[in-house]
Length: 151
Image (cartoon, rainbow, N blue to C red):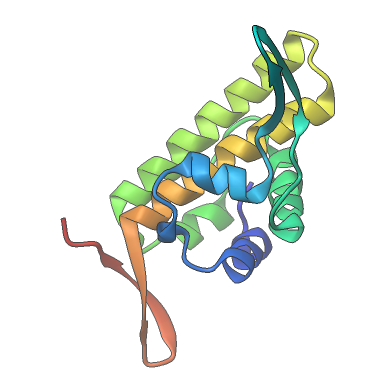
């Protein structure tokens, strides 16, 4: 779901993702969380809030459409993953497996297509946040290189 255009767009729109303490705060910033109208003992959960950065939200929604296909690692993806730390590759594969499975499960339950794609986009940004926490991009000779974050 996250290729060059989606990744570049999300980073360009949001900047440093590590400024968010928790992925839920990032989801909320993007407006991918459900609205709530509560009064007394009644609690009504509505559509997503759509507050925050609409461009980044749109990119994530578009990227989430790819999870309707089965999880696999294409030759292009293998080339992109060369030189990346194993931790990041593992997070990405775990995300791909989970999101493909969740997509199929929600569609099988009869959930509306747009609701499913939005739920996948919400979870996808959490995985992107986890990868951002794992590495720091540092400029070296005008190229970006991955460096381990000191624990």
